[in-house]
Length: 403
Ligand SMILES: Cc1ncc(COP(=O)(O)O)c(C=O)c1O
Ligand SMILES: [Zn+2]
Image 1: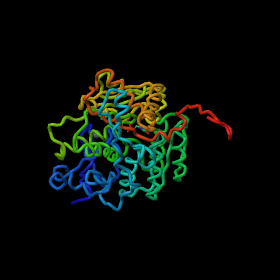
Image 2: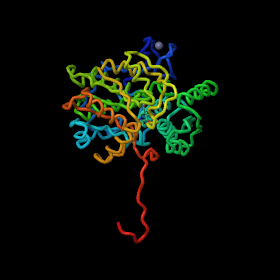
Image 3: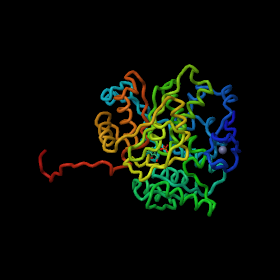
Image 4: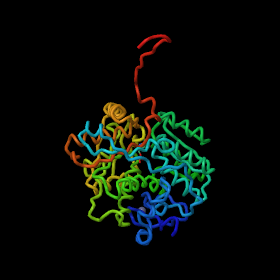
């Protein structure tokens, strides 16, 4: 059996195909490229039983990943994060079967480690020596650390307001780090220009086809953890939307492999955004297949502050094709939700994760989610990476004081 069953890259817009063995970024038509696998061939030799003895990390699905030689794998043990029950919060929201896929416990503290592990490994396989990316913080942290592990250098550009801990992670990894007095879209333009001029490998969201393959493993894991059954609903905090596109891709690949029964309906996918930056929500409300640039975007959930996503049409297609929806939540309310989750479940989730839980609460109130449905919420990172979002007053004692 081959280590990877990747066959080629293809364009989801114009169907043009590209080789998997050389550097490719966008299609000539401007669309992101996606990875195709020899699924029919694989389905004959690969079954869930093959997974039983494998390590509990995302490389357990290596046949469905693009890295062809195991020796190119760059790993910090990422993946197979817990899918945990949230009974108290579920009762509180009237969703008794509420589950959290907790990406807060992965290396680098955010799900970005998945995209970085697979993306950096594939870059190594392609002979890349220096990569460059714009980031809202977590992705830059993950990619620069994985690049360091691979012996590659990295150039990272992030907004000056990005969480300071992610800045420290990049700096500590030895990355060439720059702050931009603007948004991720401004950082993207700077990286695009530098990559063209200096020949850096541009790994901006979806300008590199392999990050999505790493993120796809969240979908594979959810299905495996539910014993190859799909939940009814999956909620995902959506910025560039790579995680959501990846989860959708994973679920479709599992169907094609025949690992879930064909009668099973795909989960309804929900893209969660903040009221301060909701281009996908606006487009979805209007039934559009592309979003418009969101002017003056602002949200405390920094990872989902993406005014225009290059893969917006893929996110929207995934919502339409699964009868899903897109929801915008309020920043003040998501901070309250973050506190509820810590109080009721003992989990300190990131603001983006809190946004997704709040969306579940809202959709239950509106009746879009039924009380008997199984609902999976993605907590995409650890709350401890965002200490400044918590505003508390604590009584201070002098030695010898009593309580
Ligand atoms: C914690 C967190 N959640 C969600 C997102 C959004 O990810 P995606 O690009 O997959 O939509 C990000 C991106 O920076 C993030 O850091
Ligand atoms: Zn194309």
